[in-house]
Image 1 (spheres, rainbow, N blue to C red):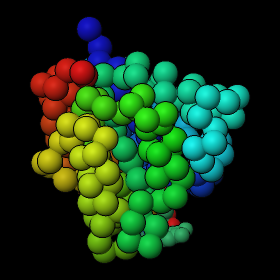
Image 2 (tube, rainbow, N blue to C red):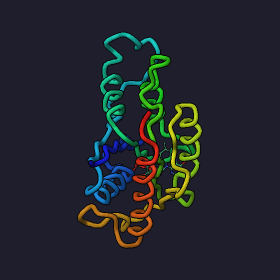
Image 3 (tube, helix red, strand yellow):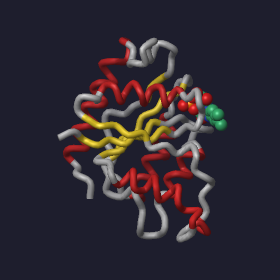
Length: 184
Ligand code: FNR
């Protein structure tokens, strides 16, 4: 049966290049996976006073979506050489209340794009650090440091020819990783 893959885009920009990349990656695996986008942009800034109150509801709704996935792909920009605040907010909010995190045991991978040379590599490393504590089995190789250029995605929204083979291979490895690490 098809794998259920959740895609978490770490940007809440309406013009997000990472969202464009994520949509292109989703198309690469559409025959093998049902892809859901886990939207984090509407979440309020989490604080622990929300726990057990109606203010936690948007976090609870996303926790259910996350738990329903066999694997999660994080497609993130880099903000000041680290994890963008909206993404950290989602990771934190969905990790609570204590002992009831949504994330643990779900196999994951990290990828991201930026026009700059380091291509989100430092944000991705910071994210991997967080995933250790969240106990998410995270694919180590291949890494996905994608330098953005306007032809990364073609006019139809598909991955363009220059990066197609690399990204197709990345996604095959990711699906194999998810199959090898059934969610706990
Ligand atoms: C950036 N950008 C950026 N790029 C990068 O490669 N390394 C970085 O550390 C940063 N820092 C940074 C901070 C903030 C607050 C913003 C808004 C942007 C530029 C970033 O790569 C560019 O805006 C991308 O378009 C962001 O991805 P999305 O949001 O379009 O998916």
